[in-house]
Length: 83
Image (cartoon, rainbow, N blue to C red; front, side, top):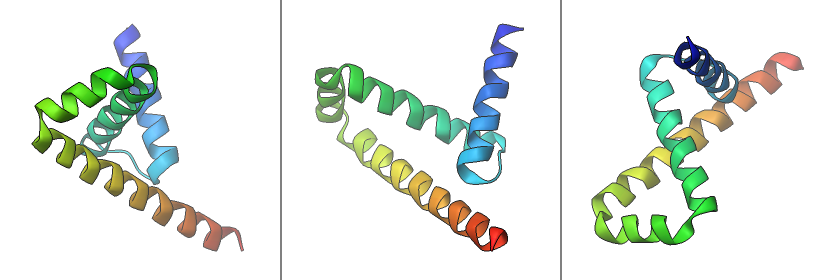
């Protein structure tokens, strides 16, 4: 029950952030949330991970950029509707 509730929270967050929520987007947002949280709470751990897995760091950068772009598109679409 608890995990379903948290999944619902992530689904709604994804929808509000990107304008839609499907399993692929939710998974990407979950990874982004986790990486962002860890990078702020334990920067040395993320630095170590980035050094250990440079290909993972590159993929995370792509993921962060994708989420940022989708969020910007969603905000622009929402602003156009509101006018």
